[in-house]
Length: 156
Image (cartoon, rainbow, N blue to C red; front, side, top):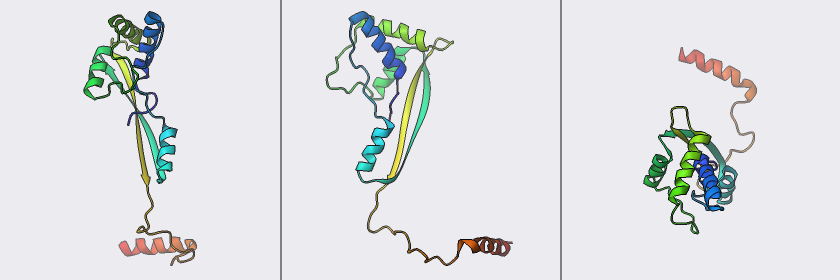
């Protein structure tokens, strides 16, 4: 799942170009979930022992146009309900210029940052074994060293 600051370069470039040329902003990139919001949602759904992780991948594109083409192919078009159906050509040209000037690489390519959010949780069920009764162990932790050495000698 994409998270938080995914495509921040594209988002900022479009916002700056639109503000400069049109005098206002429209959301052209769907909002992405934040790590803490997803953690709260998973916990409220009854999951325990949740683990969350975020990885960041940077992919270089020849220009903003190729990035937007790939996003469309991935089905990652803007899903906001009240979004405009188009971006003006002049705004796109200016955004491309801003993208290259603010974030461009030395070889002329532009980076696109994707934050990937991974999560896992466990949901308890009555059929799962619970913890054993305290004091029911057959080996004390003090004797554990001896048990391990005996085991190692038997394996030789």
